[in-house]
Image (cartoon, rainbow, N blue to C red):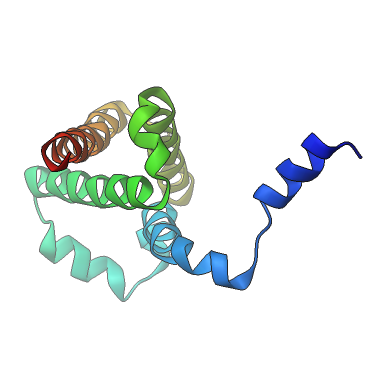
Amino acid sequence: MNLSRLALANRFEVSPKSLVRFWPLLAVLGFALFPIEWLPVLGPILYQVFPSTGSHFVGHFLLFSTFGGLLLQTFPGLRFRTALYFDLLLLAGIGQETFQALCRQDALIVDTCGDLLTDLSGALVVFLLVRIWGKLVK
């Protein structure tokens, strides 16, 4: 094994101590991807908190702005890799919509596009706030 591969392998070494910083990110991602219908106790609570279409979009916006913020906090280099940041969040959004559609046993529908746009809007707002904050702090 040459030195560059060894350095790369050591760079991505995972230890229990290094995993601690990933827990909040993984928890929000897990919550986003998990089909709510599978948790009969949680479903009615969420439908009471987000009863209308507008509040449903607010939920998506808040979830993905939280996920985007945690992603930027966990991987600060993503502040300068805009395309990768949005690709990761789009992938999470598509994953969420796919899992939900599979759980409900229906096709991905037009609402999915609105949900994805709302997800990316939340991600965009957080991304811009982090970039602006970074420039103000300098």
